[in-house]
Image (tube, rainbow, N blue to C red):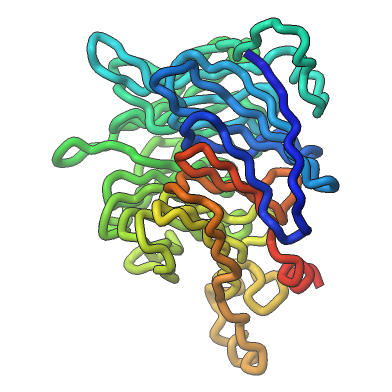
Length: 397
């Protein structure tokens, strides 16, 4: 069913915008193909009722949230991701019961036609026609087990995705307007015990040929051309690794977070120890995200109910306040002599946000506004915040 509601909030430029859903939720994504409007997608988790995709449009000028709802009656949503090429297409990972056991499946969906027009207005509530997502194709095979996540090829044409299912990594080609999916190549995680992928991230660098995955406490890098492992960080965290993200401007830098309450930063060329480590959270860290434009800005969300915005400028592409590339940093002994008077800027915690009362499972930057981000907690609370203006102008000027 599609419905719309308009919620007004009295808020200054620095205050948070809060929206509460009726159902529990843990799946959040920015709509990456939509760069004109600030839009997020939220997937709910309800055992009793039909689950939903909430389409969140934020009017930045008036501090107004426009919220529309689409039915997702396939099951509880554990992961959601939008196509980088078509704003009407998305993937979900959802649970369903099959032969008395619960499986997490994956599928590609299309929003109803009124959303394809690109209109940012919510559809008319008076139509009373039940609206639901159109199933385009399934991305699961019971032989491979439950799917942890689906990853779109970064900045791609929306025709390649990767699914991580148990210990299988499957590269899919989407054909015929995404109505057909075929496995083009695959790899299997091998070793002792029951190995299982928990998270993954497709690198936006190296012509989209590399992937990072997490299983248990390890982080692995893969070359998608040969589907072979290219590095492995054993015991990257003391407990389960929950999430990964690549620095958008530094091709070898990767951030990770996990159940040891830590956020770590890695140069995958030198994997013996992390470049930096943050220990600001007091419980499991579920989500880590680099800002797409300004890589010193980093978001984390945790079961301690807090969202932390960090300024990791010393390991960013602008450590001295100007752009520095990886090669310049890798042979920087001479440049260090020249730059003795120019010390790298100091890392800091910019802000800690405490508007949530439950575990924060996801944080995401807006695809349309680099200074705006959303966070989602399990009780169904979505909070939209902005980078403080003072920091924004310091970065820009």
